Length: 216
Image (cartoon, rainbow, N blue to C red):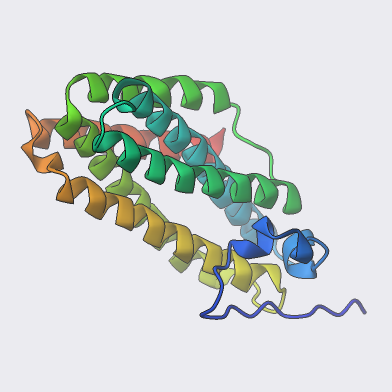
C-alpha cells in the first residue's frame, strides 16, 4: 500500500509555500489527490476548488482594474499593488490545486475576468473610497465563504496528506482576504458615496457568482 508522509504546518512557513517552493513539488501533499472518497466528498472538493480558482481569477482582475485607474496615485496605488500581488500568489496556488486534484475549471473564466476588471475600474473611477468599498464588500463575502468551506472540509478524509494542507491553505488565504478588508476600512471605504447600497450590490453579485461557479 502506498504510504504518504503527512503534511505538517509550522509557524515558520506559510502553507502556500508548499506550492510556491519547487523543493516541495514532488511531495504527496502537493502532487496527489484522495482516491478513497465517496462521490459526495469528491463533488464537494470539486465545487470548492472550482469556486476558489474562479474567485481568485476575479479578484486579480478587480485589482487589475483598480490599478489601471488608480495605479499612479502615490498612496492608493501601492496599496492596491500590494493586495494584487497577494492575489497573484493565491491564483498561482489555486491553479496548482486545480491540476493536483483534477478539477474541471468553471466555464465562466472569461466572464470572471471581464466582470472583475469592469468592477474594479468602475469603482476606481468613482473615487478612492469607492474602490476601497469594493474591496471591503468583496473580501467580506470571500472571508465568509472560506469559513464555510473550512467547515465543509471536515467531512473529507484527513488520512490523506493533501487534505490538512488544503485546509491550511484555505485558512491562510482567508486571513489574507480579511487583511485586505481591514486595509479597505482603514482607508476610508465607508466614506464612499452610497456605501451601504454599493456594498449590498457588490456583495450580492459575489454570492450569485459563487453559486454559478459551483455548478458550471
